[in-house]
Amino acid sequence: MSCDAKNTIDPTELKREILSKYPAKVARKRSKQIVINQVDDEGNVPEIGANVRTVPGLITQRGCSYAGCKGVIMGPTRDIVNITHGPIGCGFYSWLTRRNQTKPPTDADDNFITYCFSTDMQDKDIVFGGEKKLKAAVQEAYDIFKPKAISIFSTCPVGLIGDDVHAVAREMKEKLGINVFGFSCEGYRGVSQSAGHHIANNGIFSHVVGRDDTIMDAEFKINLLGEYNIGGDGFEIDRILGRCGISVVSTFSGNSTYDQFANSHTADLNTVMCHRSINYVADMMEEKYGIPWIKINFIGAAATAKALRKIAAYFEDEALIARVEAVIQEEMPAVETKCLDVKKRCDGKTAMLFVGGSRAHHYQELFREIGIRTISAGYEFAHRDDYEGRKVIPEIKLDADSRNIEELTIEQDPDKYAARKTDEQIQSLEAAGNQFKDYKGMMPEMEKETLIIDDPSQFETETLLEMYKPDIYCAGIKEKYAIQKSGIPMKQLHSYDSGGPYAGFKGAVNFYEEIDRMINANIWAYLEAPWQAAPELSAKYAWE
Image 1 (cartoon, rainbow, N blue to C red):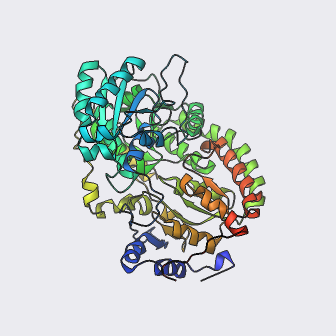
Image 2: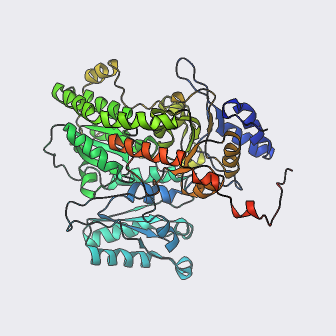
């Protein structure tokens, strides 16, 4: 199958061609994870296979459970010493790879993000056990840094040999008098880094949230969940919220601290950015403390304005609503000017997004604003509700991999539970169009006939690039260089390469300029890979 015109490719034929290269059993499985998007008048979309194991032999772009727990959720917290119990490679892999930024109030405040803490397990530790070494590491970290808390992360060999990180944590907590807690986040637990998100959410909720009842002296208090301050996104969001008079009690977990987590149950509203990584905490805080949550998005200028209005509507305060509108009116002219300028050069271009979390969804908003169509998209570690919306959650069957992750039983706290809104207030707000505990998913907001691929393989990526020839491709670091060698610009949206922030109003301007530069000064199309100029090896696929 071949086609020169991007818009004449039949996605059904492309899917059939991709599947024809796989063995029959693999093709059956992948066919459920490759879906041609169709949206009916009621917003219903096809069912997609997601959160299932990657087929052995396919080159996946996923990370592991440890990466999701330590690298994504806990890594951005600056004053908790995060100790990786395992070989040094695991600790090094998760150290500063996501460009999480933080800003301590003073030089005297703790900031451990720049350190890599690991027990550096060796062969003898695997044979004889590593618990003594772990205790010594916790003691050493305490002696040097005197942190408020220490967390411990299990890696694959730790789970295989049976080291009990939780017993060590309990013992050292009693000995040192600080909060020490562990995570059973071995890399093989669950099918992807999504399992690590869930484990981290459970751990931080069980061991930290609710330990400080101090009430912030502020009128409108929210938690920002699922924002990791990649490239300074969180700073820009804080700036905008501050201008509106909205105070952030805690961010999970960009630019975050132990005290913010401990105090987060005092907020009036939880706002969820990355649904996949943090929806567990939002649900548990609502159940235990009575804090409602809403889905928001600060990626894209129009989306940012919508999010601010949604937050203001929740508080039902006319002065706040007016202030939010004033801020939007002040911020938007610069965004619109840049958008119109960039759109002249980018209108009609095409993009593909295969990124974890909600980024493959949220960034379509920014591309849409400058006239760039998303012709194919997918997630690395999503569940069906991330694609189809939360309404399908009751249909999702619990499989063996999901049973490896503890499901906490949450009850109302007899002393700290306080419903922020009455049932009548919630119903009134929903009747006005403000939905709670709801996420529509990515697919209902995408065009019909777009190709949705969950957990894309390298072969599938190469096929998409060859057939669609998108003007830009967005993914992670593992795919970056292979895509650039194909002559197509590649924007790294997991850690933004060296760019950002891209959230909020100023972030939108930054993103417009970056995409304009990449698409319209595409040096990659002028380069040849070494094997193109002077091929030395030849081969063929097994099916040829």
